[in-house]
Length: 161
Image (cartoon, one colour):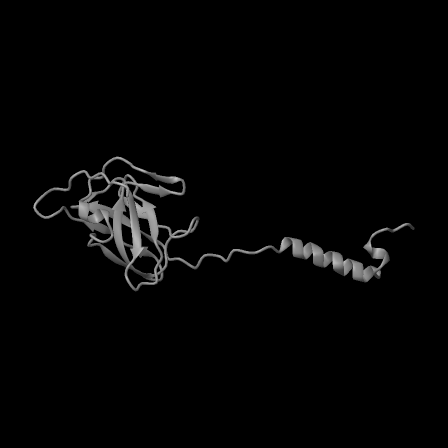
């Protein structure tokens, strides 16, 4: 028997263990930890009782909150749901400031959409009066928007900075 491999230097049981260890090590690369458990967040967006039919809703953790930024698209019927992690619905429990956008921020950049008929105060987290709390369990959170004082909601186009 002409064996030019490593097995001629090691007993056969040692060779088998060495091969098993090498095969196991090859399959064990660095692993990415699973995202934390999130809580479902969904509801309807209305402006003076009428459904908001497009745009994006964004949840930003309030100062001192341990939440995580989450966003979701508003459907034509005014419904929304948010996600903080790709492929996983919901976000972490905590207090959030809510604002809206016509822009979907994508990895490749930003693109503007059509103007939204949402009052300007809701288009920035620092001016939006909308605050919500996400708790453990299912969070059905209706988002009721109101026109700016002294006027109707005007179509607003966001500018990117």
